[in-house]
Structures are given as structure tokens and as C-alpha cells.
Length: 288
Image: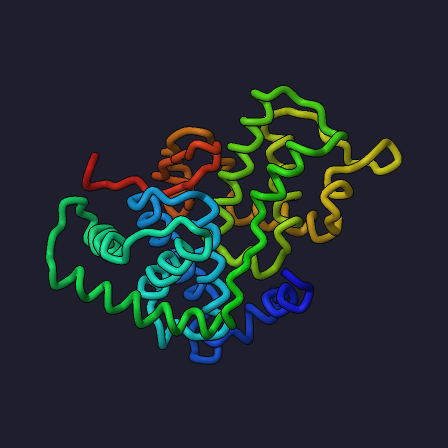
């Protein structure tokens, strides 16, 4: 991905707070944040149903956030675009799913019923996905290549000669970091920070949370953000934003802490794929 392509998707918080298409249509930032979070959670839930990889889920959420920097929630619903983004991402990441299966997943997640069957509703979702996928691709300028934070996390842990840890600790770090990254997708972090800045931030948090040492003084040797080629000030702001958004640290198991009704880590099921990447999805109340 070239610098011009990257720069068109980088926004500051003032731009997001005042000048998104939704803001121009009278939708408050708080309401837009809720709609974005709901749309991303919808993507995660249908992705779990479709058994999609972390890369595909992350790509779909990025498409979603970028789309709504070009279009308003007044004109498009979060579920329609979420479905289209997921289907498009299965193709661009080369993990294809038949559109019929995606339509079934959408209908069953919306209905919160894994056994729901209605041919007419499935057909309706197929038409929505086909129609909205075209709009989505056009609005994101057919820029399908996405630089993802978890790729930099793995590259850092696998290839950095400055980091020496056991394989077990490495897996724990990957799991913790990918879980935090998965949660950042519910909010527009990918619009404020580069993938390396997000990766540096979650690696720092993960090291601290697990209790592993991390050098913060460049006079004593390479720093994490230095190795990752990230701006230290941006990393500092990103870390603060993560803690402000998610005040309760995530755990590597089902979370049901009940400390805050609006805590997005309440009633969450953590699902790991074969590569130790995590996806946080809402617990299905109908199945418990």
C-alpha cells in the first residue's frame, strides 16, 4: 500500500468529531460511535458463524469504517454495509464464502436464532449484499489492500532479534494482543492511527498486563516502538485511547464481570482460531 493510499484513510479526531457525512446529517458523534460499534459487532458475529479468519474479519471492519467516512448512516444501515463488507473481504483475503451462506448468517444473527429458516428473507439478504457490495467497493475507491495491526504483532514477535521470549510466552502475547486489537475494531482506531501504531500500543499493553519487561528508555537499548518504526507520541495517545475506551482489561476467557452495564467486554465470548488470533463476539443469550 503506497503512502497516498494510506493518507486518504487517515483522519484526526477533530475531523471525525465534526465533519463526517453522518455529522453533516445531524447524527451526533455518540450516536455514530454506537452505530459503528453495532455494525462491527454484527460483522464479528456473522464471521464467527461463517468460521472466518481474523484477517478477513479485520479487513471487513476496516472497509466498514472507511465507508462511513464517505457516506452517512442516514443513507445506509450498519447491517447492510456490514454484510457487504464481510462478503467483499472474504474475496479480497482469499477466504471465499458462498453468498447464500453469508445471507443465511446475516438473517440468523439478526434474528438471534441459529435455526431460523425463511427462504424469502435469505433472498432479501442476497440482494442486499450484491447491491451494497458494489456501492461499498466504489466508495472505498476499490482500495482493497489493508495493512493490519496483527500482521505487525506477529512479525515483531517472530523476527525481532531484540526480543527473546519462550514460545509459550509468545503465544500468550499474540493471544492477548489480538484480543485487544479485535476490540479496537468496534471503534474507529484504524482511522486515527496507523496499523504499526496500533500494534505497538497493544504489544506494550500486553507486555505490561502479562508482566513481561519492556524497554521504554532509548538510552538503554531499542524500544518497542522504535523497533516497530512507530511515532512514540502517537503510540502514547493510542494507549490512552484504548484504556479510555476499555477501562476493564480483557481476559483470555469468557468475560462476565458486570462492572459496567455499558462495558463492551461484558458478556463476551473469546474465540481463538488455529493461529492463536482472537475474535471477541457477544454471547448468544438464546443459547444459554
